[in-house]
Length: 446
Ligand code: PA5
Image 1 (cartoon, rainbow, N blue to C red):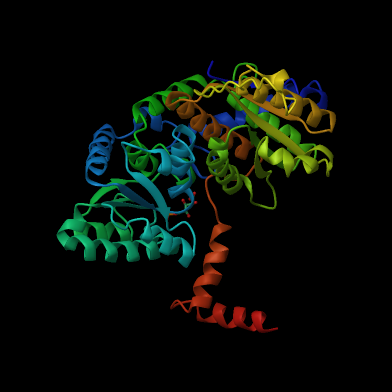
Image 2 (tube, rainbow, N blue to C red; image 1 turned 45 degrees about the vertical axis):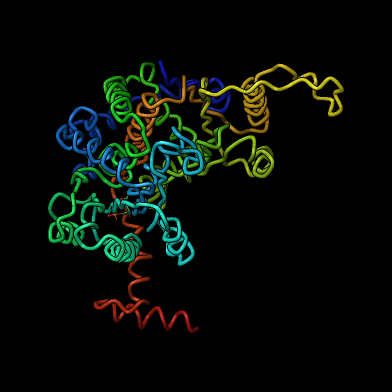
């Protein structure tokens, strides 16, 4: 098994019959998910995606990635939320958070349109200077303000630099098959397009063209990722909690939540996991945080954060549980050198692997946090690889859907995200929002 759930450090916090008491609910959550009879059933395309993905488009993605690799030193990926986080998470996890400084044979990849910052936009533009550039703009709706503004800027930049015809060869659009401003615009300008399937929501879309094109540009083996996801999709089908680690994760989260553990901290011991945490936070936060319910997803990278958040986790309010990613083989080794003079007193570590030190730090921290009253779910991951990451992405998506149905929310909508947009549009004076604008301006004055 490449991923296995160890619940040894949770059992003392939950009644012995916990799994039995929630088993029927899990069977029901599985039934409504797989029969498509639950809320949000128009967005279940991700469930069988690892088998049912568009093979013709997949081949086109690989071709296009090669074209970008051979014609650009910089790829700017424009998108936000589900059209951004998964891509960045995979590149940083499998290549490095320092990918752009370390890459030799594949283009540097920078992200734009994921914030409203003139600093960020100016910096992204300046990173293109003196280098050949391609753009991949990603927006399922094709109307999201942040990426739309960034695309307007980068399109003008590309046309000025390469001419209209030249820019056309360097701009790639990932959006809805038929609808949306971006699709209409791409067709009109003749840009090559890729599809975000109708039935796959943004935060579940990393294994579609949304993630796969830029991930392939980074030189990552997307066949292996899909194979991992496919194997995971076949493995986690039995709703029996004794046989399904993915469902057990979903069940444990709900068991702990019902006992007052309202915050889940995803903890890893590698900086390359930091963006994976961000992807996971969006997946769970946007899927479950609704109807005044939901576990708040937080994250830490240890041991760095043991020197900042460690105090709270050990000793603060007891409303937390942790899910720890324990990656056995990270594909890198470092032996701690000997110092004959032992000035720093560290010779007891001489000749030992840094990974061994990390493992012992993990074990010591788990025990300390458990002693402090924090349940720890351990996800043991065999190695850092394309295949296993594909499995892990699917594992989290499936667990999220089951967990959302256990929580009795619709895991596939995000009505709350609209509230800020409405207010922002009103304050910006977008036509159609006049009454709301008056109301908000009044409130801001008082
Ligand atoms: O998960 C989601 O649905 C959201 O985070 C969207 O991905 C995000 O709002 C961006 O939307 P779009 O791809 O339509 O620009």
